[in-house]
Image (cartoon, rainbow, N blue to C red; front, side, top):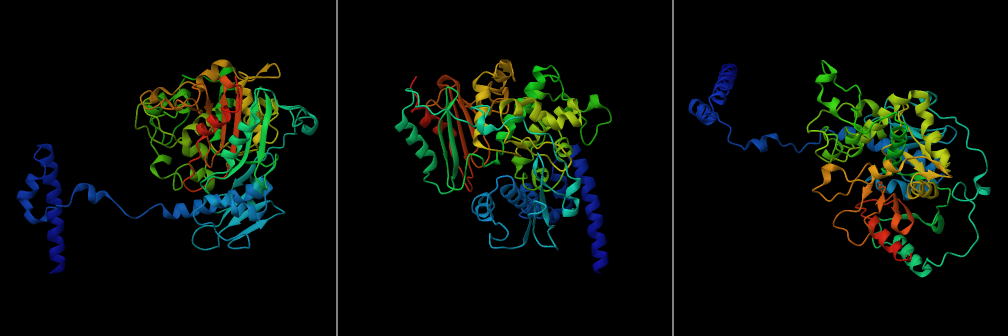
Length: 503
């Protein structure tokens, strides 16, 4: 009896599909199905049928969470040179449920190999990260162990000549011993500093504040346990560094803003000229307007988006080229890490592997005294220049000073004024939305009237900011380890500091 009933229902289902197809073709909707099968018609709303309360990516998220903790711990210990207690107190405060405590837990710290493993065997994979010379910590694949560390990329370029302690600022760290200029209101500057450090929200943790006026450091302050040498993650402030490297190649006519990226895409179309992604240009991705499918902003950053490259050992170069086009390029602003990484991969294609790995230092960092900056890669050697850079406050001040000086360092042009103008020009897709973003740099929104409109800024998660205010000859660097809701406002900080500088 049950078998016959199942066969009858199967027959009804086949017939229903056929009638539904014909009914749709004749624009009669569900009327035909209702007439034929009465009570068998589903009456629940179509949208309710498509919703799911189950997180199908939860297992990826657990793996990524372990990988993220491994990278945080590895860099905290072996790049930032912080204690395990400091790492758990601040670096890992960003995670909802860190594994273990400073006293111990399901993790291993291998000081000889400068590596960390997080998790216990069985179930979710144990995730590992290891320090590599000249790069910082790299996350390994889930099926790799510490025995695979030697296969990871490293950069063995010698450091620039000279001792930075004996080289005057900004090329080195030796500061002049002279009174502050009369244009600085010291009391107001101290008040601005207190505003940055003494936050009402316990989730806003300022590590350092550095103010440069007229090319000179006029204020420098660090939180307890942090020094001038402490390097922390830039998060998306790295995107502005990436844009600078791209700009150098555009200035050299190695790349063009408005030429197609010319990359191979996944999955591959039957012919390159038939793939609509072939219309995407460098300008589109730098303006965060590629038109490619949204991943990170669809709550998948820590599931199947860029988090797989950042924290789980996947290839950033392959995954960034694996999205389909859903909008016309240049028409819609969508902040996606993979847009930046497309530009970075285009840089690799242009330069070739060997020159590519040395390029950040030879073209930018060594030329501007940024010797404390490590640009990290994934395990395949592709720079994760959308986030994974470790540096200190002074190097970021040097970076801002390069822009404040119009792209010139020690009389040599590093980037052109045309490029600086591009990164400061609002993305066309934001014309009706506040004009708050340019070319991998953030701009003063249209509705802010308390900050000069010529100001522009980098911005990174957990409160990493380099703010440039040309009209007041200012560079402001704020480093943080904010967590939770965060919410530190860089334009409010700029306003507070500007009050301490008289024209």
